[in-house]
Length: 429
Ligand code: GLV
Ligand code: MN
Ligand code: MN
Image (cartoon, rainbow, N blue to C red; front, side):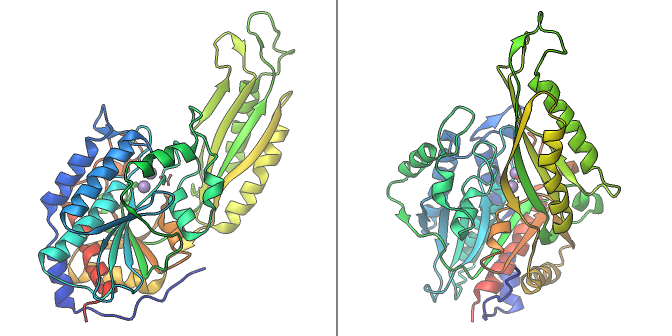
């Protein structure tokens, strides 16, 4: 479904330019530097996984910046955090921007946090120019976009939009057995004075800024990508059950070796996923062995599958074969497949994409339109309000890696386009 009915308000080109030009590159960069200290890991990276102490500290820092500017800060029951700059018509559905603050275990300094800090910078730019908008503008930090600690990802935006139930997320555990529910309570308890807001509030529009996480923009020397849609993603967990046995005394023929079966399954899946045009994305990123001992034949393997493609039909056809192939190549072991995440490809509306393009043209900032290979919270938002995204380049396209890097001037250029589009959607007349 594509929703494309942006608010009927307007803002003159001159005002849009004034707002965008008030974006301060250094302020934005220093905020990235401050956030990158929270959960810093060797190699310039960040480990600030969802609902950890580091996530709680990052939230506190963001809240302190927002409160210093007098913005209202609210939270919902899954700890999505909202920073609101009031509109002249404050009862109108807000124009929302943002992303996430959680990172991968060995993540970088820009994935997610850029969208949140770009949103805050946009609000401050409007304040610095004394510009009031008709509609309120909110910056959101969605909970658990990454899905690396509590799987699957994008829980906050999925629950906010009604695509998932909070109750279904609460029992999910991390690798240490900690429940999402208990980490969530700890996070919410850290900010007891924040007003609670409901899920499924009406939103006027949503724009998410993000690093590209791919190499195209850098290769073309373009500071901005305007995203027209997101490819579909399906996640699975495969459990392979064998029997533990002594590595020195049990013949290969007599074994039910879960690792051997899992490797055969993965190899067969890789063959099935192979496509001539190299569009399929197929990743086994987690491989847990029990009992994980060098001299014991493995009793059990759990591995993850992350499978993505821009074409819904290809996603469906190939996903359907995963279970059958896993069973067929399990040998003497037993394979069970559970699907944990399923997002169809999203297409953003032409009007809101057009507004971002207009903003880039007005500001004379080079851009191209493009699709997103990564999934984002925008995926879920696109089901409830006009939604679009904008990308800025990152060095060599590296992401989900401590080496992730982006240039201050590109981060600022993206934020200028974002600011102009936000004020356009929020209206000044
Ligand atoms: C989001 O982090 C993704 O994996 O696309
Ligand atoms: Mn991200
Ligand atoms: Mn990510």
